Image 1: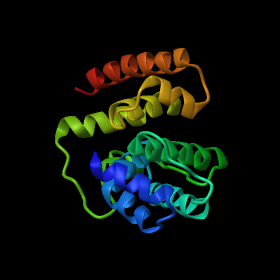
Image 2: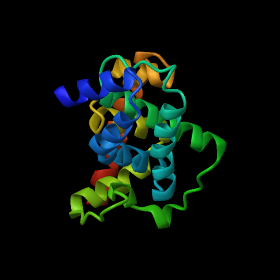
Image 3: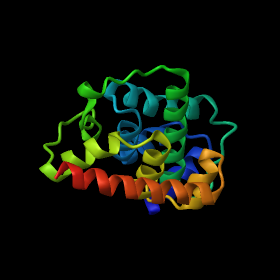
Image 4: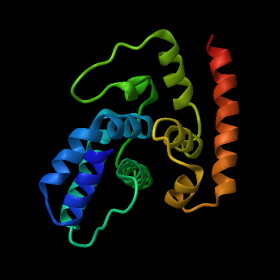
Length: 175
């Protein structure tokens, strides 16, 4: 907690080295989110790096207030949404199944339940998957997710509920 506040203070004061600390502290969480949303490792790495490049380029304009982790996760989710909208990443599902859990530096051996979850998550519509991942992995509140997506909190809650229902049925079908 103290470390993140120190990083925010340093960043807000113009210390570019604080970005390295942010990256080191949150890269696993940010890559997990990007992989879950883009389902492609090179694109996920690009999305995370793009967030930090934009922060560096706009450091004099940006003032982080509040939760640093939430800020970074929201920035990565928005960048992933832009990448998908612009068609910069094309995912071939057969090649991407379950790959989003693997970080760029290390491969993680997943147990069977995690593999089933990865396959089921990939079958959800993007909007539902994004809400579930931000809420579960990012631990973001519905209000923060709604703000980042530019929709009402009721829409986010609906996406969450429908996403969970579909995820449950997909998980049961996989078993």
